[in-house]
Length: 249
Image 1 (cartoon, rainbow, N blue to C red):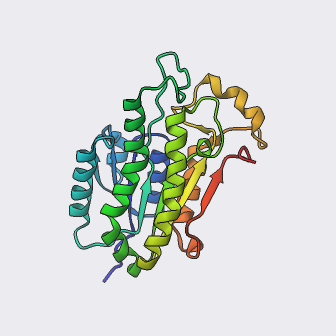
Image 2: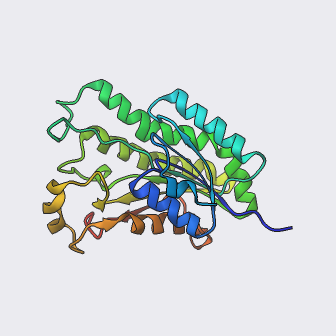
């Protein structure tokens, strides 16, 4: 009887790091279940490894619950081998002004934490049983996408985003300890300046702060996520890998 492919669940799949990560896992013949605010592009929908996509607004707790229920239904009794919590929001003003502690309204802060922090927590809890099956099958891992902004003040990433990512780094450590008893590893990837739709011309001066003197590519982050979920990292949990070209140093 042929062995079923490993299965990945990833949030925020329609663009940037999420989209590149889905492509990397698909290239490695993983089965993919995703969600985002948008529909998946037609080219991706034709990917035979894309097992399901559910359009949801993850800043809405009811939508998060809906996604978990639907994704678990798609899984059935099959194990889950990787959960990648990628979806996040970094709000700015209409003039792309950085939102700090004094000029951002509290409802915006709550929305940011709902998506960037509480959604990964809820996802991890909601898929713990399926991940436990994956751990007994061929290993299971959770990867949270944090940020360099969660570790030092960033000129463009706002305070709500930065503190939510710092909280996600702490959550990664807490989950790693609790999930270890289930055989599930929990780690984080902290990207720096990555060439995505979030990056504008105002980011160009930051290249001088990067020892490698260039921005990273989404595919480079995706490669790190993939290897975090592979047997090569079977004794790594509670870690946070900086994918910054040395900018965090």
